[in-house]
Amino acid sequence: MDNINIEGSAKTPTVEFDSATGKLMIKGRSIPENSIEFYKPLIDWIDNYGKLPKQNTLVSIQLEYFNTSSSKCILDVFKKLEAIRTSGNEVSVDWHYEEDDEDMLEAGEDYQAIINIPFKMIEVEEIV
Amino acid sequence: MLSFKGDFTSELLSSILNIIENKMEHMENDQRVRKRVFSILLECLQNLYHHNETISANSDNSMRSEDKTGIVMIAKNITGYSVFTGNLMMNESVEQLKDKLEDINAMGKDELKELYKNILNNGERSVKGGGGLGMIDIARRSGQKLDYGFIPFDDNHSFFSLNVNIS
Image (cartoon, rainbow over all chains, first blue to last red; front, side):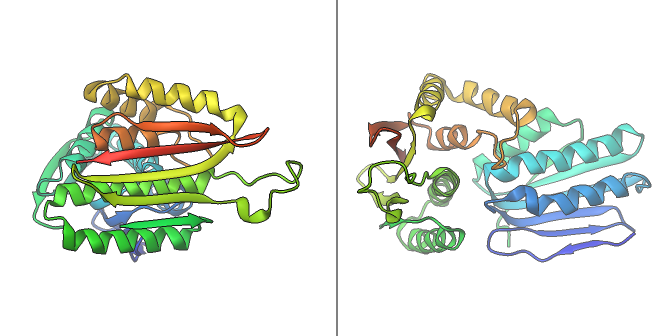
C-alpha cells in the first residue's frame, strides 16, 4: 500500500507512515481549528494498514503543541493502533516531550492511562 | 502586549499566535511559562473562533453586522500574564456554560485530570471536535481558578468574558 507523507504547516504536523517498515511519525504542531478534517485520511489509512499490518508498528509522537480539538483525533489514532495490537501484533509508542514540558509529559501519561499500548516517555532538548 | 476586537478568522488566529510567540521569545526566559501562555491563548482563541455569535436580524434594529465581534487582550502584569477574551453568546446557553465553569472551579488538579481523561475517552464529540475539553485544558494549564463573567446584552444575547492568569 502507499505510504503517508504529509508535510507539516504552521498549524498541522508532519505525518509519515511507511507501510514497509511499520513506522509512523507525527511531528510538530497540531493546532488546526478543524482537526477532524486533518486526521480523517490518517485514520482511514491506519484502518487499511490494520488489515495486513507489520509484526511491529512503532509510533513516534513528537509534538510541540496540540489543541484539545486534536486531542480526540490523536486518541482515535491510538485506538486504531490498539486494535492492531489486540489482534496479535506489536505496537509501541515513543512519546517525546521537550525538557521541562511537564504538560506535554502529562498529556502522554493521560493517553497511556487510556490506551492499552506500551508507551515510552522520551525527553528531548527540542522538537525541531 | 496585544489587543484586538473584531471578527476572528483562521488567518487572524495564526497572526495573533505568531505575534505573541515572537514577543514571548524576547520577554520571557522561562520556557514553561511561554508554552503555557501559548497553549492557553490557543484554546481561548479557538473558543472565540467557534463560539462567537452573530447578532441575529430580528434583534434590535440598531444592531449592525459589524457587531459580530469578539475581543482578546494579552497582557503582562506583576504576577505573570493574563489572557482575556470576550464574546457574545445566546442567553439560552448561559446556564449550561456557567454550571460547567463552576464545576471546573470547584475541582483540584487531580480531579481536573480525571475529568479530562474521562471526557477525552468517553465524551461525545462536539461538531467543533473538542467535545468540551477546552475549558478544562485551560484550567489545568493555568493552575488557577477561572475568572469569568456574563453580562446581559440584549433580549437574546449575553457577553461572556474569561480572564485566565498564568504565572
